[in-house]
Image 1: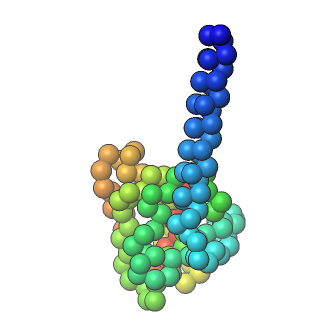
Image 2 (image 1 turned 90 degrees about the horizontal axis):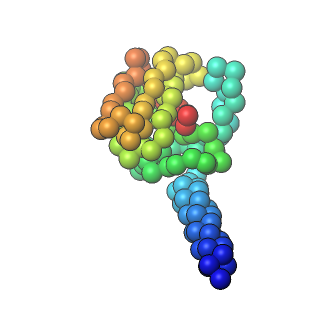
Amino acid sequence: NVGIKGGVLLLVLVGIWLIYQNTSQSSSEALWEGYETRKITIEETEYTLVVADTPERWQQGLMHVRKPVSYDGMIFIFPEATMQSFWNKNTFEDLTIYWMHGEKVVGKSELPSIERSGGEYIVNSPALADIVVEIIK
């Protein structure tokens, strides 16, 4: 009887874990409903990126995203090249940031997750950039 109760408890716990995993992944995916995706090659690696091309989408960025996800990161497309700053507010995954002017990479930065850095952390573009790519590590 104790063995049956233990087995049932184990099945319930596994079921809860599976529901959490599916909810966690689908909630990250649901953030991007209606967003365009784009493939881009940087340093000989092709990435599938969610496109952020409006002020609201720039502000949201990759906040609240946890792996696994079905894309590699996000591409931010700005109307003009300016000095850019990005921070890790509510960013739960470490990111590699590529600063681009047109098709040319003008710099690369590492942005630690808010959990790893222990607080808000800001990285700045080394040159004017009109495209910024965040790759989830």
